[in-house]
Length: 253
Image (cartoon, rainbow, N blue to C red; front, side, top):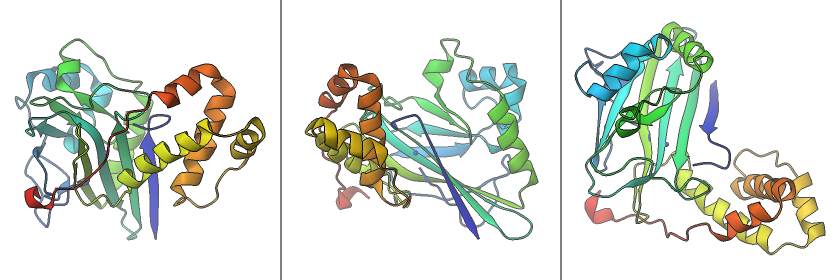
């Protein structure tokens, strides 16, 4: 039995790495390799001084150190979309999958990770080392403790970089999470919401999709509700969405 959760910021700004077999010495995670212009390594002290300082000074997030990864962007371009997939298997064989996704193609325009920067990747947060260098302390610890408990109790744990999207729209990774499909559906939904009559907008906001795979329906519901709640501000936000074509270049994968 498989359970899938998807974490994202509201109106969503993640990557799946599989390791075939070996458990890293400093990590309790199986890590899978994937194509793409990044490196992903288990966190180890002295790998990045700003990440060290953050985890050492925050005991709650420090509990996630055995499950923390450090992703370094070697692409020469900013990363604007990222999905990380975490998979747990309990001692009864039940599999639980959690996708943590973030992108810069919606309300948040700041890059997920600038070229040359490193990213602390855990089951609950993804934070650039450059942000930690400015004294960022992270969100509340309740979620960190809850996820640490879940990971501590699991029989198997795996992390995978599922989707990477560069600032020019180039996509890497298997994208099992359908992150690209979700971003494209969001853009299409925004166009439909902007062109909708008041009555049509009300119907969209009242129609919550029941199929979790209905990406367009999900975004129509969320964006129409956003416009109804926030009015002209939301309309201007949707009009300003970047129009970036997402694509793959097979020659570099």
